[in-house]
Length: 270
Image (tube, rainbow, N blue to C red; front, side, top):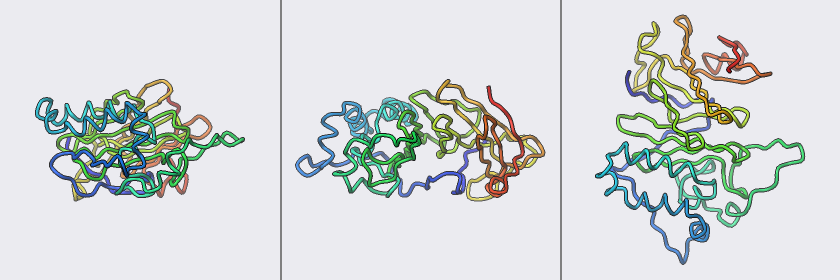
């Protein structure tokens, strides 16, 4: 097994992190001028995360980087979208800076449409965005809410580029290196990529820390179960995509195969 980084693709709306200092830095706050301060005053969960950031040096010394990151992931899993925005995370509008539209984004989200179909929010919008990024700490936090805010996936990067994943506060374990990005399917299933087994006949390095063949991990938030789907020896999953149609999963090896609707496999998960 080896650490790896994926190339950006259209399967997700994620973006690689930018500058990473040696230690996470707590945001600087000016209560008199910060419009998100009222949100922080009312959210004990957000204040707990801010304090954990502030104590990063001390707690990392005590727990180690992975121990600190594990607790960080647990605390982040308790936040709402507006908590992430108030803490200064980047959002789907601008991943590299804090929210600039607090008068709009700090309001309660709009009620669901009559059709019942929600879409993931993209700011500025009441209730804040549905996705958040940390571009400046070594933990490279990612947070992805479902459109109805019922479920939350959080990733935290540990040592050696390993990625820890939580869905609704439950740690998702995987046998190999997870990707730091993913996407929701039907507001229930969180899908991400994982390094395929080393003994896959098509496995290998393709440059810049990337590997040739990937597996899929599908976590069912409704049942808290995780399914790991490895490619068969003849399947070349260089950029796999999972789609759900009429109760059946369609597994595509690439984006092009998805666009042409040529799945390698169709299956029903228990």
